[in-house]
Each structure stands twice: as C-alpha cells, then as structure tokens.
Image 1 (cartoon, one colour):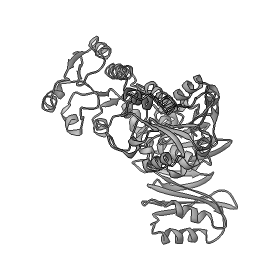
Image 2 (cartoon, one colour):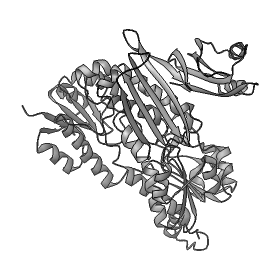
Image 3 (cartoon, helix red, strand yellow):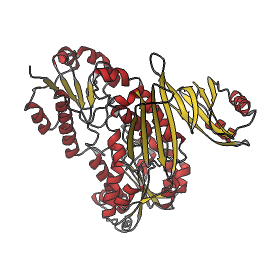
Image 4 (cartoon, one colour):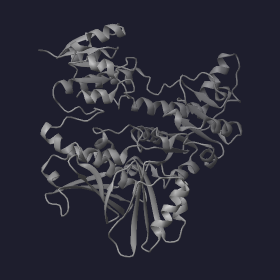
Length: 528
C-alpha cells in the first residue's frame, strides 16, 4: 500500500510535487483541529510549519505515523519526546534560512552605516535631509563576529566582499577555517568587542548567553561603534543597549529580534540611530520554499528507509545493537561535555574517542555522535542533535578520531574521550555499572575514579596533603550546598583530584573562594 502523507500547511509547490511523485498526498491546509484529530490516524507522514500544534494527544492518535516534518528551523510546536517514545522520526530544515539570515545581517549593516530607512522616511515626509543623514563607509572597517557557525561564516564571506576586515571568536571553530575565510581569529570575546567598528552576534540561546551583550560588554566597544542582532533577542540586555545608544557610546544599532515578540513598543524605536525589522531574518520567498522542499526530502528519506539527515531525535539503529548501545548514549554525551568543560580552553582542535571491551564489536558511530553532541551543545548557534553533530564539527574543522580496542584492563566496556585544544589535552573515561549500565565516571586527569554522574560535579586539583577534603567540605557547608558524594582520585604522586557531586547548583563564587586557597591548582564545575 502506498504511504499516505498529510501536508497540513502550505509549502512550496516543488515540495508537494516531490511527495506526489511517490506517495498518496492529502492537502489539509484548511482543516481545523477537530478534523485533524479525526483523520491523523490514516497517515504515515505529517508535514507542518509553525501553526499546527503536534502535541502528545495528537501523536497518540497518529497510530500509523512514521515521520513528522517541520518546514522550518525549530520544532517548538512538536512534542519531540512524545514522538520519540512512539518511534516517530521528527525532522526539520535547519539550513533553510542560513543564507537569508546572513543576507539580512548584511542588509542591516548597510542600513545602519548609511541611514537608509531614516533618509527614506524623511524624504517621503517632504524633507530633503541630505546633510543630516550622511553615513560611513564599511570599506576597510572592522566587522566583529561573535559566534562563527554557519551564519557567522556566511556573513564574514559577504563582508570580505565589501573589503571589510573581519575578526571573529568562536572556540569551536578551527584556526584553519578562519584562515580559509580570511578572517582573524580572536583570542577571546573581549578582543572582538575592542576591535569592532561593527559588531554582529550569532550565538546560541542558552542560560549562559542570556543578556550576553550587557553594559560591561557594550562598554568595551569602541566609541561610535555600531551593533547588529539578527540572531536571538534574549542575547541582549536592551536597557544597556538603550543607554549605550543615548549616551553616544554607540553610533547605531540594527535589530531584527527582541526579548519578547511581537514587539511593537520600545524606547529603542524612538531613537533616530536605530534600524529595526520585525524578525525578518528568515522571511524570504527562497527560504520559505527551501524549507518546504528540504522537509519533503526528509519525509521521503524516512518513508524510503534511508538516513534522515535532519532528524532531531535519535536515528534508527538495529534493534539488537540498540539494546547494547542505548545505555551508553547518555554516558557518551556526558563524557563529551565533561571533557570540553575541563579543558583549559574551549578552542577544540581534535577529539579522540576510544571504545574498549565489548563495545568494540558494535557499530559505535552513534556513540561518537553522542560525544560530539555533548561537546558542542550550547556552543553553536544551531541546536545540536544526534544527526547534525558530525556536520557541525566538520564545519568547524574539528578532527574526530574513533578507535576500538577489543580488550579493557578493568571494565567490560569503557569509553575514553580525549579533547585536544591549543596543545593541551584532557582525557576522561566512563563505563556502565550494574544490570542497567548506569553511567559512571572512572577516569579524569589521568586518575582513577568510581563516581556517579550527578546533576552537578565539582573537580579540584590540589597538592596531596592532609586536611584538603575537610577544607572543601566546610566551605560547601558554609554556602549551604549539600555534598552527595566526594571521591579522591587515585593516581599521580604529589597531586590529587577531588570530585564532589551535588543535586544543588554549585555557585561560581564558591569555586573561586576555594581556588584562592593555598595548594589548590585549578577547579571546574560541570552541570548536566
């Protein structure tokens, strides 16, 4: 029987035609929620945009559904866990708007530099304001880019076409990639802020980047610099931006996104040196058409039993292999995150992953991808999943070496992850313990451990002498942080590694207070 596909929202005709060539396609763009609920059980595939809410209740009724396609970047309107539980692939079109977003960034850059919308409004209002709206050239000016993923790199290439100097910072992009694009690799964020005549941000939206551009960072910028945001509204402290613009610290700003949307009233809108657009970064005919076609291709791949390259949930693995590998997927992800968090610099050059013992006899590519996901999560503008992580690592020039060893000295299975960054390397190892293969940390800083992966873990390296554990425990108690477990690693003479787990968040100032004490060499807190 020919699989049935429901196209619930309008997409490009080319996308519909692609599906109609092979499948029984129904166009349900005029269906209401009741009709969708009543008929969803008939279909093998569902294609939506952002308006249709594909919640757990609807998924429960979709008894034949094998794949859900979202014609766009996000999947906020789809209950991905519910779909995953039912074995339904969820795919989107994450690359559909990257060119459009990059071009809109450049459009705002030029509009801010040459006061295009202000002059347009004045002239249409009957004023010949030629002297008032003189601008600046971008030729040989410096464009600073924070976040050098797909969109940031496309912006850089276009800015180089204007013969701008470009400096960027993204620790998860290799030096070779910067060199290929003719872009200066900054040592850190501060270096970009201080050098930029124009600054554009393309960062992920995480708790750590909320309000990233604040008063302190605006204060580091050149007097008279200009600021652009076509990424995410939550990255900016808008009160701080308003102050920077009204005080004259910044000469202008171009904004496409806001902390809450739709946004129609803001003190920023009253400023003559601010250019705003209503989240148009992805709003081109080409991007919308591309999203529909790419999503149709993903649905075709899923129904044909092929690899779904833009799946946002776990790709298919053989049933028997999955029984063995499934418990190690979260372990691999946590080892990746731990390794990059413990590195002295997050500028990753290469990753080595060694699978030892029984794991060596299986196809471990899924575990390698899980490691990459853990390493990159929260460090790229795009959401990282078990499918796109290899491509994101490749785009950033991160080399990945996977090895397998059929024996392991101490464990039935062992995963060892080594991150190399700026000449330094950090290695961590983990295994599964018990009938459920609960993830355990067994190697850190070259020292042996046996530690459960709690929500929060603090690591300290210090001179191996009596009383150090007591000092740390006392300070944790003073801060009201309950210690679940404390383990001292066995390894190097003269130095020791202490790991402390807690279900409570470990404050940054507590870490800093401990590291000021005599004998403590370094420390990190990692939260999962």
